[in-house]
Image 1 (cartoon, helix red, strand yellow):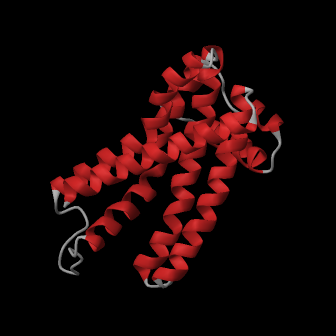
Image 2 (image 1 turned 30 degrees about the horizontal axis):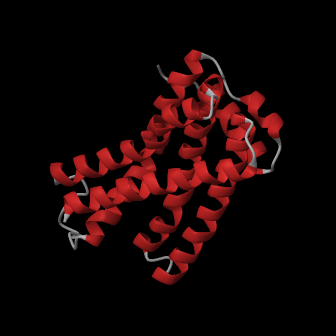
Length: 196
């Protein structure tokens, strides 16, 4: 299923509303079964973030060379792509069991739809500091500061969206956000471990 331009616009509008603590932003998302599956196909919108991640990993591995193309190592490309996809689906998969434990299975679909769109926006926004660093437009310290500031904004957005979609208290929503952070850290560590 391909995401339409209208759905992208509505979903990003809903995400901005949630960023501003407006729960009515949930009405902008397609909460149907079709919307559920299409929210996963929205990962294609994060292709620019994948390219930045790939370039950043090549820099980390000391493989930056003007005579080599960015996609000249199938192994690096595949591992970074696997990490990118795993980071996108880790929390939705884990939430199958969490929502069962909290007796909130009826709220699982809206949670995943909104979380997937937040993840798309988050991946794009969080790739900006790395891109600035790669281009030489920011020092490592400045890129880290931007990355920290953007991360706090995205985490707060995820916290509010979790409260709104699951109808849980702030502390439970905070725990779910922490679970997402832990899962992303595990995925990132596994990816870096495979790359060496």
